[in-house]
Image (cartoon, rainbow, N blue to C red; front, side, top):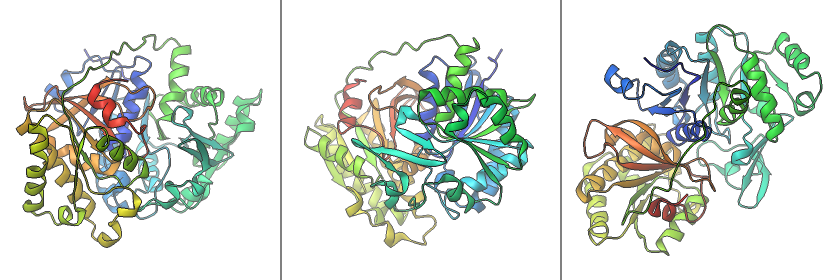
Length: 443
């Protein structure tokens, strides 16, 4: 017998998908993340799971792609009959009408689930993301910025955030009316009445502010209160899960606490990175200064889809691993080295780069017999992991100091990859010593 499901979710990229898994497992909610809808044998491996995720790539896809693929994915998730079905987006909300349209995903989900209102929750204090009166704020190093003034996200190479008011940003992607339950309402003694009023208005999308743990708890209660007989379709960051966890605990639906232990060190790991983030740049530089070998790759060559650049990269990475050293193969070292502009208009380029890095990583793991590896970059991870023959991930070890990119255990029909440990790191996630912590297995 399968356990009744509290939640099903679709992650719009792979690193975001593992972020949700980490949030749920942090409170003892057993979770499995599938790369595609599983067959019966694959699903039966995880009978105790109370949450099931489906990793996607919609953050880097067009609305036409979403029309073709999200209907199928959402229909499968709906068939699981979980109490909540969550379309998970990045907590920085970076998106546009042309790429990663959150509005189009909401349109598709609202139609399929036949809901009058879709709750939207973006703030996640655990990740240092905050929403106040509809505006999004995010941390960078030691400061918090409005998202349209964020040193990284305001200059994102594909989907720069130029508007902090998420209602205005989202209105460029959907014609649906967007309402707001703001901080003042959430802190009001009559919050239930105010939320009911917001739901009785003509808004089809209702955004909830989350600025701290108190408002997060309040939002979790309101989302759980909105449930009907069928699954409730909800959109937002992993702030959705963090909000619901408190409500589930209060309702006695969950009572487990996690029992993670340090994974322990391995002698070497391989990292492939397609991230242009300055956070990843610092992490690469720190790793190279502390015993990792670095191999620079030209993304334009990988974008061609030809075999020669992949073979060449494998040949450059294997000697380091054979000598007992960890290696990082990267397509960029920060924003200044980003050549994405040269690939503008080549719709398949991002996928080809991600797949190429995945093929490189697959060869390094198999030939060097690695037991632990990393893929860096949200879009990169979504396309790269598909090359490894992995059908599911579960949590192995969270990095408590920098939540969002945990070490995972892989599940595969291929013995070379079944049980191996892999971390999928988003561009903005992790401290400077992230790669070293993954190699050393310390949280």
